[in-house]
Amino acid sequence: MFRWIVKLIRDEYGIDEKQLVRTAVLESDLGLSLEQIEAVLEFVSDSFEIRFPDGTLDEVVRLEELCLVASWLKGLYKRPAFIGPDYETSCRSLNPGASTEV
Image (cartoon, rainbow, N blue to C red):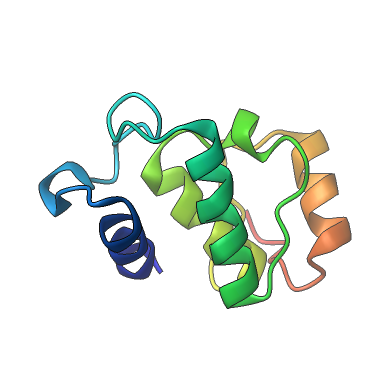
């Protein structure tokens, strides 16, 4: 999923792949606006049939975090340790396929 999201951001926003590293902060390192990040979330949501709850931009700051959360919501990866309990509850209510494994 990481590679797919990297290609999406590269193609949609013209960001050089050299900048699209796991630790890249979506806003400051990649220069994406909040509207662009929301558009990326929407595209990922529609493409993988997952739903990001309100507050996602408070939990997801780096490219790697976005990929881990998306993979978890799809049921492909264990719950990322960095997410808070309230956000986890919101995610699970919208995505019953999210793994319960930590």
